[in-house]
Image 1 (cartoon, rainbow, N blue to C red):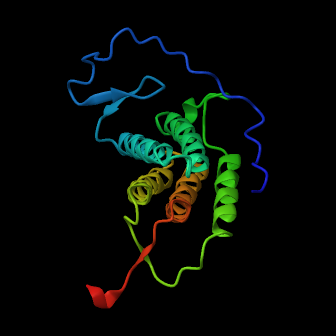
Image 2: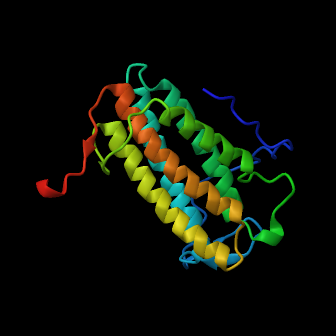
Length: 207
């Protein structure tokens, strides 16, 4: 496997949370707070974007649990998915903050994250057979979960594209989600390969 690109040179701030209770009642009227303190409606595009990234993180976590249950056959994939979960929390940090409020050491998405995803795809693709048709999700439980994560990632990407067009986030966030959806597809194929599960290819005449 090629060397993993280094993370951003400047370290991010560590979380500083002090939650004494989970419910606050401040969202009872359909509004929530951004990192900068601004109150916005819960159906605001920005909230939709980072809420979908949160949904994506949950599915990636479920896929990671399935990888860990594979009796050692997908431990490397589980480690990669854990790294993605940290990256998605960093992405959520950016999306929940107005551009003018971003701090210099605030966790964020970087070009190094995208380069790592590309290196992962290149390494796995090199050991996989060439595709001659589209793959149907579900060759294994892990494969199916990764495909669910892929489709949620595509939805997050579409929302990020809209947010970027309105000046609400940078291009790197859109590129990361685009590359992650591709990586989830490659990982789904790699999971089938590692688990010895046959891929189910689309055959139009079997419809």
